[in-house]
Image 1 (cartoon, rainbow, N blue to C red):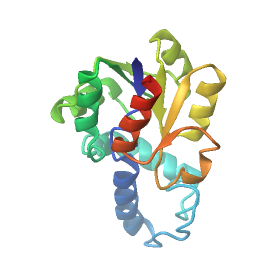
Image 2: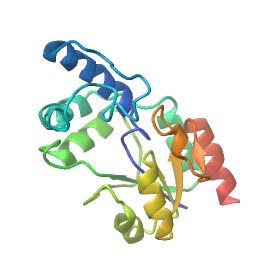
Image 3: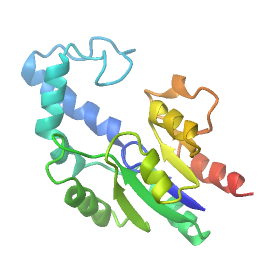
Length: 192
């Protein structure tokens, strides 16, 4: 099978690092901290930042933060197993200006530094990765954004949602994985 993998929150521990950095920046701004721990997402409702402040934070810091992301637990182990099992792994990520000045270089360097094995890397033109999935003949796409999974499924792309702290309530009956061990099991069952 050809498996598409998003990078942020699928391969990398994106939300964890973003939260750390927003907390640091918040101390510099007004030191209000998390005002709503049950906010929809780190960027929506947890802090008292305006949309413009959040946008500026990402534009000024995202590329630097992305260089230091850690991988999700057991990600490399299970990606290697998928390759050993004969699957093709295509990494599809939407990283774009203004958050990234050099999205391809930043991402490829990060993957190389962590010795992540894959067959192809594709920068998506938009958050909706449907077109890239079609062009790369993706059998199953793994993403963390429910809205994107729904769009891809509507367009005939099978999707597994990688759960995060912020999307647990958005599965809406679609297949999901809590971690890489679950994801590997889900993909193995799908193959049968």
